[in-house]
Image 1 (cartoon, rainbow, N blue to C red):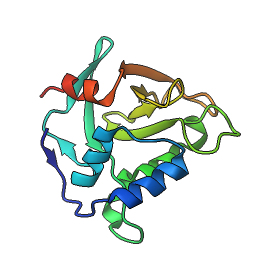
Image 2: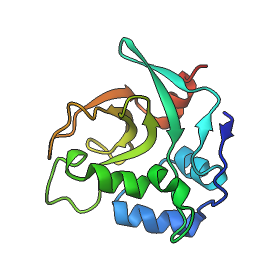
Image 3: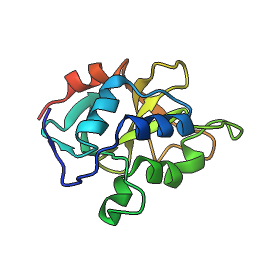
Image 4: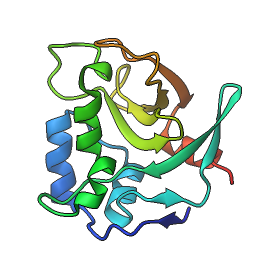
Length: 154
């Protein structure tokens, strides 16, 4: 997969480990590599099937370097988590996250890693129009991120 990305910051292993500790998850190795090598961006293959619908990735989200690159703030995973807050969490007492957005989709939904059933996440679409406070609504896309990557087409 080729990613078009003008954002120059690349998180290292130490930064990813700190973020994972805050989020309370371990990211799949493919996501870790994507972040360390590309840190977000627009893929050349952007479309995938989810049920009967074809969905399109606007761009993969990034991890922003602290205090810089305000142009990419809207695409920072932590910023998106803060924006979605109670609508992406099902347990108000949860420390960390069980659904992690990894890509913005056309029309306001997000592609996410879903840790609600296992420490090995599935990939889902978080539905912004249907989700409510403490009630995230998702649609499963694949059993793993590597399986999801194989689903992408132009």
